[in-house]
Structures are given as structure tokens and as C-alpha cells.
Amino acid sequence: MGPGSERAPRSALLDLLRFAAAGLIVLYHYRFDSPIKLDLFSPLFDRGYLATDFFLILSGYVLGRAYGRQIALGKVSDEQFLLRRVMRVWPAHVVMLVAFAAVIGAAEMAGRAPHNAAQVQWRDWPAQLALIQAWGLHRGEGWNVPTWTLSALIVCYAGFPTLWRRTLGDWPAASLLVIGVSVLAGADLVSEALYGQGVFDLPSNLGVMRALPLFVFGALVARASEAGWPLRRWAPWQAIAAFAGFCVLQATGKFDLPSMALLGVLIGAAGEVPARGRSGLADRAAKVSFALYITHVFVATLWFNFIHAVDARFNPPAWEQWSLWGMAFPAALIAAVVFERWADRPLQAGVAALLRPRPGRYPALAPNGSGRRH
Image (cartoon, rainbow, N blue to C red; front, side):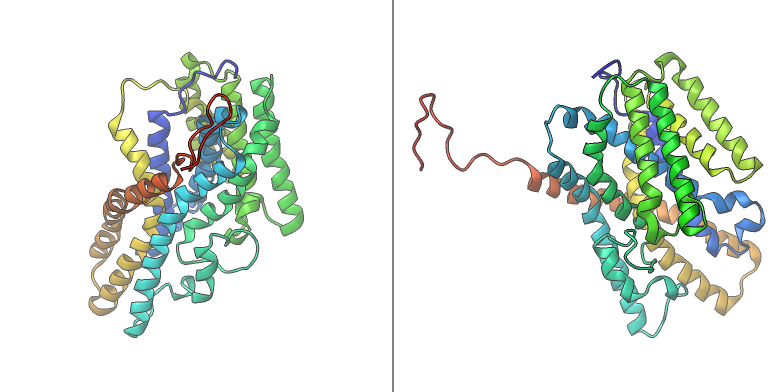
């Protein structure tokens, strides 16, 4: 497999970055319900979508590191790979969406429409359940908003094995990175031509077009890692430089394409930072990240409806409003920890048992080719 064949696909730093990105996405979505819109303080609060793009790049990278060798050696078929990936996200998604429907349905029966009623239209629910809301088939968006990325990633998963096999060979790492950035730039130009806006600004119902180039970029970063980039001794410094450059760009203005390029470098470099022993905290944070991603909007629906009711009845002073708003973040984290432990983990155990290869119905043939059925 080349110089990177013995590199570890897991990184404690990458796990912590994943958790930090999930936290930024929570802030990005909760900013709408703050007592004063956070965008008024700084335009940075309006760029939380970059954390979602980080996840999309990370998805391509992690799958390349975790599954690339198996796919290259033919140890897992394209169908098996797609089934595993879909079953990793769909069961938990269904649980959350059913919980959403139960809460919204109960509220409507009680005559209390949620304050974000425009985001929970019943006509959009079936597409979300099937995870096809990002395929450009309809304009509706809402309910568990972040799951548009899961919808788009299903398409990415379907194409990943072919992409990985096509990039096998003695590609220089620099060439792979340049190709990856070129894919992002090309997608941005196509999006501007077709929709009059950059690919990173596309609405969620066009999520496949937004996610696919980012996912491909992440996979190519993983291929560059397999080709020997970056050297372990330089990885921490490259990660620091990429993160610093990203922060400088955000403080300067809206520069999405170079920001994505730096996120790819950050992910590739962080993936090679050696861990000093096993980090239980980082591993736990990575597991909770997915739960936080798919539960925080549900928590927001409950919490902020409560806050709006309190505001309407008691008109509390500003400091109490900010306190109530701030409590949504620990509430979201607690809900994510509970969901990961008591919902997602048991669901995945059941999926693993369901997908586990079963012994053959009939005994193996004897060396001479004979064998009797029982």
C-alpha cells in the first residue's frame, strides 16, 4: 500500500477536533435563539457552516484510512461497504426523527404550535425519514436540519469504493492534494454558473452537490497520507500552521475555498500526530460527537420553546435570558451522552449482530468434493 500502509487510522487530536466541530455546529444553530442575534457581534458567528464542511472532509478522510486497504484488496464488496455505512447512521436518525414527530404531534394536539413551526412541516418528514432530502428532489428542509449531511453522504458512500480504486497507484502526495483542491474549485465554478452562488453556500436540498467535492477532497487527503504525507515529525507543526492560517482567514473575511484547503491540511496533519498512550477522553468525545450532531436540534426545539414561553409570560431581565439560553449547551451535551450510551450504542450492537457473517447452511465439501446435506 505504500509508505502510509502502517499508519494508524485513528488520532486522538482528530477525535478532539471532531468534538470541537460538533460544538461549533451547535453554537451555529443555537445562535438564532439568543437574546441578541450573535451575528451582530461578529460575522464569524454566521460562518459555522464551515464546521459542517469540516465533517464532510473528515468523512472522506476517515473512510479512506479505515476502509481503503480492505477495498483495495477486495476484502469488502461495494454493496457491503454501502450497507455498513448506511446502517451506521440510519437507525439513530430514525429514532431521533420519530421522537421529533412524537413531540411535535403532541404539541399540535395540545394546541401549542412550536415557535419554529415553519421548520417542522409534515410534508417534509417522509423525505427526511428516507434520508433523501439532500438529493435535489424537493425544496423542503427542516425537522432535524443537520441530517441533510447524512442524506448527502449516502451518495458519497456509494461512490467511495470506485473513487478509492481509481486513485490507487504511485501518485505523489502533492499531486493528490492539488487534485483535491482543484475538485473544490471546479465544483465552486459549476455552482456559480448553475445557481449563482458558491458551492459552499448551496441550500441543504442541494446537499449532494455541496458534500460530494468535500468528501472527495477528504478521500484524496487520505490517499496523500497513504503516499507518505505528512512526515510524522512535521505533522504537529503542519496542523498548528493550518489551524492558525484558518483562524486568520476567518478574522479577515469570507474566503471559503482557501479555508477548505486549510481544513484538509489540518485533518491530514492531525491524523498523523502520534498519541501518547490511549486517550479515553478523546475516544469518548469522538463517540459523543455523532450523537451531539443529530440530537442538538431536538434539544433546541424543546428548550427554546420553553424559553419563549417564559419570555412571553414573565419578560425576564436580559441576564436571565442569557442564562437560560446558555443552559441549552450543557443540556445538549447531556442529551448527547445519554443518547450515545442508551440508544446509539445498543442500536449499533444490534446492527453488528445483524450484519455479522453467518455460518453456511451446509457443511463444507470434503477434500474429494463429496459432502452430505443434513
